[in-house]
Image (cartoon, rainbow, N blue to C red; front, side, top):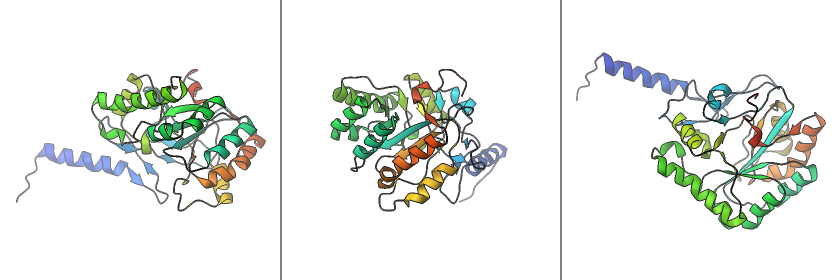
Length: 271
């Protein structure tokens, strides 16, 4: 079999190579990208500057704002935004909720349909305590692989329906892409459905239940990367997170940080 290349096909190949080269994986498993075409799936990733600096995302904050999407708040304010992702209950959420209540901190829990259906009491407790429940989709698929607008919308709407059945309330329109996978087409679709897309600017490897991080190492990693306006992603399935949360919140408070709510992002357009 022979391959015949003309100028157009060579240009296409070069474009593909450039796009592939724009997405690399570091030793810590974080991806970086130079650009995100509308139809291409990319995993959200960050590059970290010196301690205390604001990380850079796949798309700059100003570019994300065009799609009502955010990954960081006002970098001039010592304010943090605490979020938890959960696809199932692992026994640690009651302790997390108690610690948040003890500190008077409000968080956003990005939940999937399975969690809402199987843990209605905990969901109601989140709302009673003043927390926000965000939309992590109903079945946690790779949303960037869904090109049909109705299929995309269905994942969001089914989660909304489940939440309303359990709480009697409409959920806040905050969306976090499962696995952080997205395309600009996804961001447009979320915005058309009335959602803010929320990524993050601070996270660590806390999701593997069989390989939980050391408590002190986890605190040190998070503290050294804390920055003004940080949107913090933790997993409520993590035993380590349940054990360190009190110390972590205390450290942040001692350093003068306060905690904001995600629905504030973009309202003043000053982030």
